[in-house]
Length: 618
Image (cartoon, rainbow, N blue to C red; front, side, top):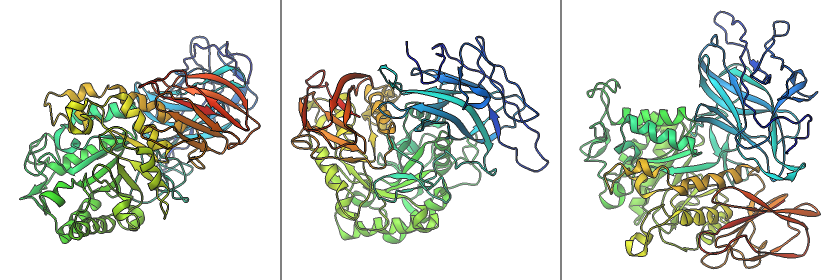
């Protein structure tokens, strides 16, 4: 049996459901904040209004914990992964956009508990609960409807054998504040451009992306380069909602696509440009998708970006694939600038990150000037450099830092480590991480799942092990997030033509990366850095053991389960709890407690290809 710090024990059969009482609104004014308190009974929930206020008192029942610090003296505890508390919005609720805040506290064991807000199978948002006492945790801003059921779900349980080695979360009140009302938090929908606290920016130390108000943002991308070009509206919804449910936060896609995007119409029969001229985007009056004469290429792109935004996804938007600059050039500096301005005027206030390049590097000064002009145009159209978060996607084996690192429009670097094996990815990313001036770095194109190794089928095809290896090497070398790709998905069957991308959405590599995402989000990103000396011989060789360290924890990745020796004393504390983390499943197994001094050798639970492990030291 597993107990929380508040007694009595809460039954593990926890499924909470409660109504919301809504106050009357003044004519022409905004609604007040609306609080919901979970009240648990054996069969459901009951609520009681007190003195006409909007606070709901919990009822005493076997499935509650008594807690003097909670509203009404009781709260609901979530003790295992998947346990949830349900909040049912009343039929009298005025539909609209609300900021949702949860009052909660957590037991911090091997990191903070994380809760997700879900409506049915769709995850609306998530947040860690890093506080041991009750505090407000903002889950995001969402469009809500009357009678909608919202579930707060505990997603990253860890059990180390009993209290205090047990991660849990206790939830109290859920508060809805109409978006834009006084006291409403910043929108959860990311806004990379534009102004306000929802804008994405580079952190003050230059190491990571975050919201302008300091909230964390993890660049966790899926690669859908041909998304605007190849998918219809129904397919767009399927793709985006699946990737949202799988935890991705960013979708990488291209406006002027590589696969004959200037001459082959999109899924609705439209081309982006008149005569391949970037100064003449093909637009028509209206945007009704039922009317082919109205719904043009850019209306469809609007739909994709807006649909992504509604799900809390950011689009990493490439204005053009590099083919149209290097190989079959259509741009001059003047048209590149005008096209960048036009795009940014259309999308600058939407949740986009601007990505120049597109699998090419400037081979001449003239090509470099095209990209610089496009960057200037984007900044102009967005309303200023601080309103356009921008980077550059190079070709395989290259980083943007090699070409544009010192240029002020380049906010963070991208690597394409490419589609071969054992390319010393950790050392490459680490070298860019260590450059000055300091800028975040992302491996935006690692080896794709099911891609021919080194583009040669005779070498075999990349699998989930390859995907995991490069992801952990990159992130443990300091990358601020990661991108995943699949051969059938990036081009949406550009090769097979058999809609195999839909099956590929369930490929194991993407699922395995969710566990790495959870590991990263379990601790604050601030203060975390690669440590080249924590492991003896770390970061060396083609398949290195690598380490990432925070103030009071360290993670060591062994790609093949090889043994390694750790130099202790690098994190706070007189003793350390050691745990093995399985990158395939996210499961953990205790590895003992040790003195935090001297050296210690570790042998992972398994070895050989596909037996990668992470040692967690706390």
